[in-house]
Image 1 (spheres, rainbow, N blue to C red):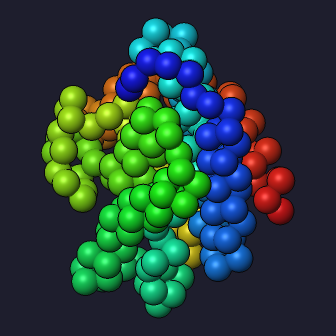
Image 2 (image 1 turned 60 degrees about the vertical axis):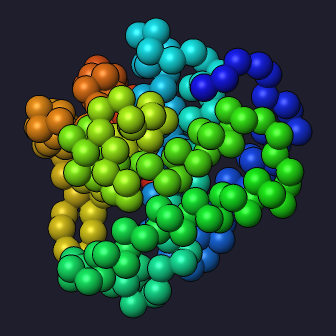
Image 3 (image 1 turned 180 degrees about the vertical axis):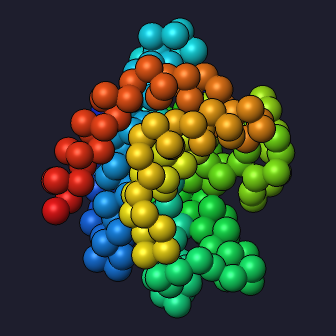
Length: 222
């Protein structure tokens, strides 16, 4: 991250891009669109805790929160037969789905060029959120197999929020997990060096707020 002020024009332009992305995604796949909204709420909980813990500063927290809903923008490039499949994906289908991170990065590059963003920190944070949110601490994530300190904090935050939402949301092939069940799984993933322990620790002490923002996001979407 770099120092300096993010211009209000850049923030406004990206905020509009985030809203357009959420609306466009919802038209194609309502479930994914609602997921993007919930991720914004859950990310706010995590970054607020990281500010309290002096892991990141407020400006960085605000950028991560702003950009988190863009993380799955690349899914607009995934075929309907895969994106909208009601059950688990096969191996070949999963490889296609994993490509949404790279597709998303290309879309971010186009956004940056189109609206002529001139803030290096904002651009880097956006790139990392979209392309790297499936990297894991043990180096077994995708698309680049980054590990430990190679995974930027913004990608770690979104990864934890993403897993939390996936587990606590009902799918055609699974019921929604309870928050205690989900927290136990997040702890297991930290122990196995998959997720960032600092982000999960924030969530552990914020379960009441997580439950509330989850309900609010679902009610708003409905």
